[in-house]
Image 1 (cartoon, protein in one colour):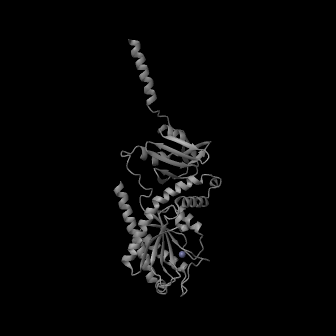
Image 2 (cartoon, helix red, strand yellow):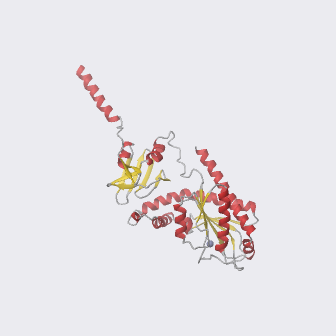
Image 3 (tube, helix red, strand yellow):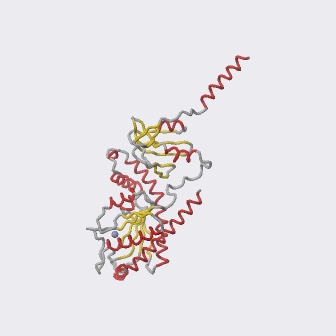
Length: 358
Ligand SMILES: [Zn+2]
């Protein structure tokens, strides 16, 4: 009898050992001053299922209904279909995939220990703090030129500068892709926007049309008409161009990058449309200018931007009256003020929406 109890206790002891998670400290690595942890050890200690594809150098983590996609060399991770940025990229160290230790705190703890698992993960932007203002054309590229000689690049820069000043007065950090009459390639504009980690991207242009009677203002966002996979692949190729790290030159994982980019664009597109709508309605309220509306178009600068992005065609320089209006500094100021009001409305609504989620 006693022996049975002892065996029973022994079995209990063994099973206890097996179920109590080991509290062994995870091996960490110091890589250029940043604490990294082995992805495999982290997954094992957190009971996360993982797969690693050595060819594409991507890792797929899952636990319950949650999924996380990671990629070596990339600080962007996709958590339940939403993009999140780590401060430092996923890396390879001594032949093993390592991840910044903060990943546990920043992503895992919030994801797997939340009380309401059905609750949606909030967007990475908690507030709009930084905006990129892109004055179209410049330098050797004058853009369109009106009959009275007004050059698009000059109008764009002036409106962009006025808008930047207004936004800075509102306490927003503004990055301008150009602040003088210089030529900046489209690739460079996109890179400036992405490198700055801005929350919004606003490109300022002026219009032209063979139909000279056409006038008014219109706002563009990235076109949903462009085939998603084509667009995503295009963005992925841009992303490769934008990355200065040579490690990407031989990275064959373009398709995964395309998927990541597509996810970002899907969530950004809805925001871009809301921003475009707020800008249009502010213009409509403040000015006599005809608002032609919101349109989708595959503009390069919008395609490559990693944040909600719009392109505003402030008016038609091909229209005689509108060119005269655009020549007037007071009118350009009114345009800038209306755009600022539209942005403010968007920021306010966005902050309210974020607050409601908390
Ligand atoms: Zn233009």
